[in-house]
Image (cartoon, rainbow, N blue to C red; front, side, top):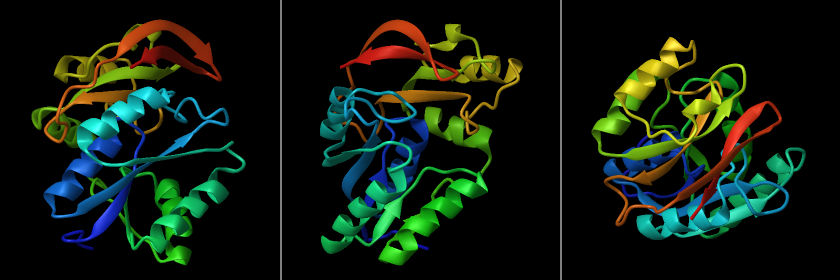
Length: 219
C-alpha cells in the first residue's frame, strides 16, 4: 500500500514508534491531517505513556498537525476509537498510520477497527528489525526520553534518561527488548526533523502504578 498524496491521521502516543511511523509516512508523500491520542478516563493523561495533555498539545503545535483526543476506559477503548474513525471518514480521511512493529494481535486489532469503516491502515514499521528501527530513529535526529518502565523488566533508574546507543545497550543488557515492543518501556519524543521547535518538558518524581514505574512529566 502506498500513502503518497493521501490524507491520513496518525495514531499518536507521543512516543518513538508513532513518531517514526509519522516521519516515514510524511517522507513517503502522505499528507498528515490529524494526530489521534487516546487518554485515560479522566482526560488528563495519555494511556500507556502517561503523558499530560499539555505535552501532547506542545508536540502537535511543533509538528503543525491538529491533535484530536478522546478519553476512554480500557473497556470502552475500542468503541470510542471507532467513533473517532467514523468522524475522520466523514471528513474524507481514508487512511490511518500506526506504529506497530511485529505483534500480530496489535495488527489484527487495527484492521478490525479500520476495515469496517473503510479506513486503510498503513504500518510503515511493520516486521522490520526492532533494533534497526531504533537506530534509524536516532540517526534521523529524533530525541526521546524514557518516561515509563515495566517493573521487573527494567529498573526505575532508566526513567528520565534520553535514548541513545549506550542506553539501548543497557536496556538489552538488562534482558529487555531494545525497542520496548513488549511494553518494557515508553518514551516521549521531544525533538526531531519534523518538529519546528523542541518540546520543553520538566520531569518530576517517579511513582509505581499497575506494575509500571512512571515519571511525572510536565510541559
